[in-house]
Image (cartoon, rainbow, N blue to C red; front, side, top):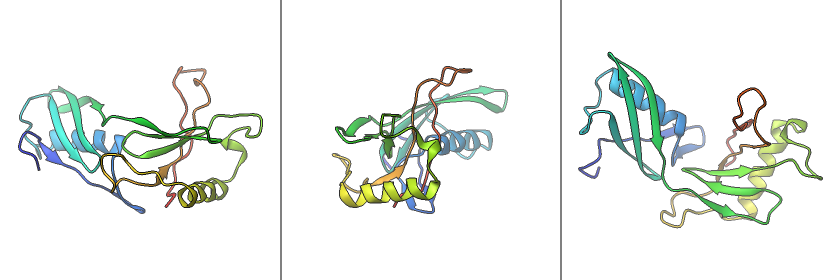
Length: 163
């Protein structure tokens, strides 16, 4: 671990080690601070090394409880375009599928179909991080089709082991 950082974190799941996991980072920070497992060099901030790079987590304490965590993730970029789908990177590679004339939306397909499509994309295309060639391949499939009416936030509706 690089000395200025507070901790290194690995995200292990059924497909192996993920380069980054947002909700895993938030949970790790919460437990690590509330249980005094990590003593941050700067109160309110944890600098975490993850396989994808450095993630900065800012947390707020309410007594001994963490009331919020905000992460600044590794830099993201559009990894592929001019496909029927877009592929973006933000710690992991994501397929972004918008409804279109020949695709009404993910809710019209079974999980097995979506997983098969992602695996076919991994076979046909090579998605490799330009600064770390150990980060490669699709592992997540979110879909955004505009803001959810009640909250105004985008919708993520599907995640799978695509390897």
